[in-house]
Image (spheres, rainbow, N blue to C red):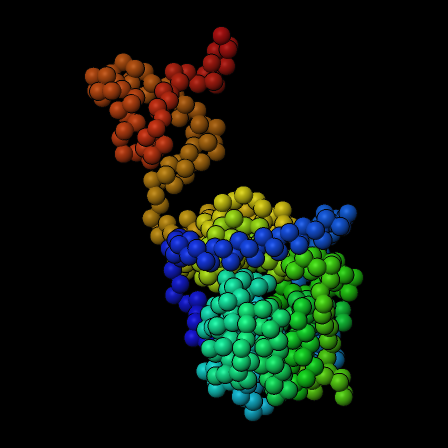
Length: 489
């Protein structure tokens, strides 16, 4: 793939272009509407749904507070079961680790389970630089890869494509990547899935190395968990000789009992199912069964930065269900590409600035503003991430990051007000000064400054924007304190 999010324009420009694509908007409206209806039906069956949401949020928050301890527990459990654990501070370190493992085993191609973490770090492109081809095996990811496209949704990366477009991609590109599309292929979903199955089967049987992510990592037993709907994940997790899993450090849950909560929340919130068709768990190397060698790369890549943000750290609760995307009116009209990241929609609008930091580039800084703050995302989130709260918090950080070291007039005015109001003596002096100013303006204002208070409001002072549409209130002749001292009469 040559397509990349690098160099994408800021959200307003990208969204304006997306809004002009009527086919895209039809595809998105149909797909998100279908997913919303399925989710509502299965969530409505659960009488204690709100209690499950609260439990999921509490488990995540408690885990994040002791993340260092749980990570060490996970590392020890993985190593005890024959898994090699690697720690990666950023994307480059993680990609180098995976590339080194591939090189050490002499492989020139790997098969991949759908993974947001590997997309986040640009693993496919990094492996290509080392002469290793990475084949996506998830149907939607395969469509994106063959079309030299970019993912636009967390759950359904090819949500912006319709059946006719997928058929053309398969007919045009499959032959160059392996087994060609069958002759006479139509846009019937069953035929398209069958063509993908035949195309991928030879890759599963040939590949010696696989790369996965993980939906969850159970610390107490060193178990990784992947949930999926097609079975391609299980093929990758069992057939190749070497398995490498790239796992964000926030994916950890302490116990199997904790996992139980999320296996109820995730499928209902993501695919609108009571449970996923395939839930795979693996805990190290077992002689004669599955991979002969396993590696786990524990990835930071900005997660420690997000964890340090007291308001923003709740974004690390995210279980990548995409429920917030499917209810977001902004996402439904612009699609995922406008966000310029593998994490689109409301969660992407907060997760990207938290991972990368604000004030770094215009595109990232535009994302906290890609929202109407309607709150639908919070209502849909299975782990109760208050996305609107984090968006407002990040907007303030973006503003602060662009002050450039020279305070704006309103910032100077606010600091002066804070200095004055924080001390009773200073406040008393200011009140007496305002009383004197009132008497001067009342007596001499029309002669010294034609127009009196209205003319004063038009002067270029820090409150000028506020007074464009409002009168400047006259200072009181006497402060409350002075009035009280003389008896309150």
